[in-house]
Amino acid sequence: MPTEVQEETLTLEEILASLKEMHRLILWNDDVNSFDHVIYCMMKYLQYSEPQSEKIAWKVHNEGKCAVLEGSFTEMEVYRKILQQEGLTVTVD
Image 1: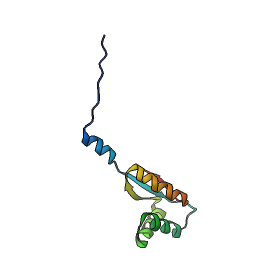
Image 2: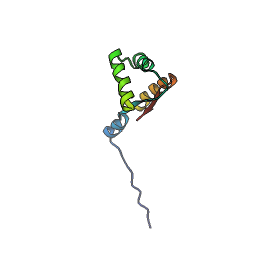
Image 3: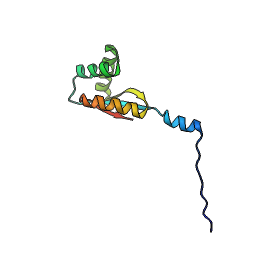
Image 4: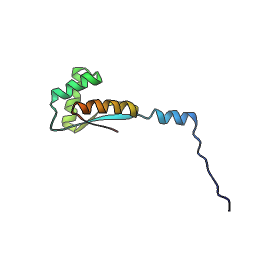
């Protein structure tokens, strides 16, 4: 009995859409880092203004986490590694 093989083909649009899938860099609350350190890191590495960085720090403090950046998985991984080296708790979603 012959076996049927079904091939899956993707259109160029589908391939490009999968490459453009957006990921988020999540900053988590911890008991180690000070507000000043979080604000410093947001300004230095993510180019947020001081008021924006303060808002992020308060959101993390009050809600436990905050999405701080959105982009490709590769880009988010680069920033995750940088911020982890600064002692921050970050993940890619």
